[in-house]
Image (cartoon, rainbow, N blue to C red):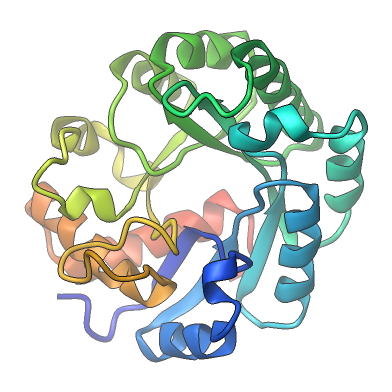
Length: 259
């Protein structure tokens, strides 16, 4: 168990409407559960501004700037310039969430690919990590990572599989993050989880989505990241507190935080 261990929710969506009524209480519960650090991930430019305001007003909360593949089709022509402008703020610690989603196809695939490439190039230019969403796009994801300039780095977040992209990410020194899905009976990426180098493993809630067992069926929140640590530790055959400590240290390094 992770009782008493410091935890880092490396990927949550604190500005989501699901938290509108009780966001402050959610943050209090996170602290009480040992979650001392959180990164609120942006889904589009407007969301990035909201996440920045939240991060500015709460110690231990940081944010990102970027456009999710679901929102790629609605992105303004100057969206990436606005993302660039936001990155000058110290609370903005990564580019994204970006990537490819061929399951929902909310945006045309060619538009998703172009915008994803723009995020990768911006991350490389600025020396910031890129937060990557990938669903049912393994081949194109692997190709995009291979085309990215040498030195581009980031994380495959909420990873559930995709061996081709995983292999490229491992070769390029990327991180891999696991969510509450790792606690589900249907989780099929346990073998790949065990291949992630210990110093490149992250955990997240992706809240308010994907609540882990034993909270499944409820709205997810950062306090529940301890259950993700428990699930990942079980797959690794390790102590959960040790996994919590290691993934916290990894997230601090990944996001280039002072502590």
